[in-house]
Length: 111
Image (cartoon, rainbow, N blue to C red; front, side):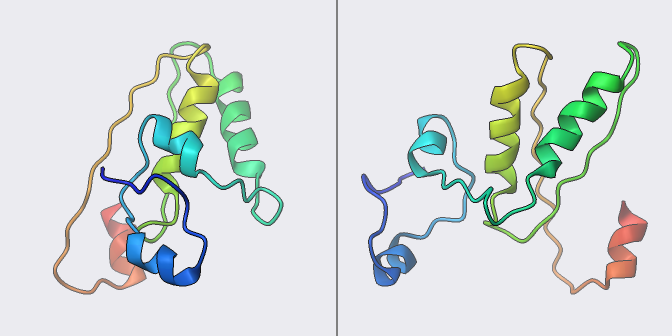
């Protein structure tokens, strides 16, 4: 990903350099903005607790959803970094490209 050397200082700069692709590697630390003061931060704690209560042979499925560019992949990478000393992490990313508009009921059926 080709990111600018510094963060945007104005809304115009932010618009011009906006790239909704997931942050990777060192860019996570460089561009990450901690929004925990205005965001529900229980999610990461809930994931950690859920994993801690599982037996070694048990598995769980956790679904992260949100619009493009809202920080899902970045948050997952932060969780991965936090948990990699205790767990074997497998990171898989799948993009679903749909050409028609879907109703929420259709998405729930797909899940």
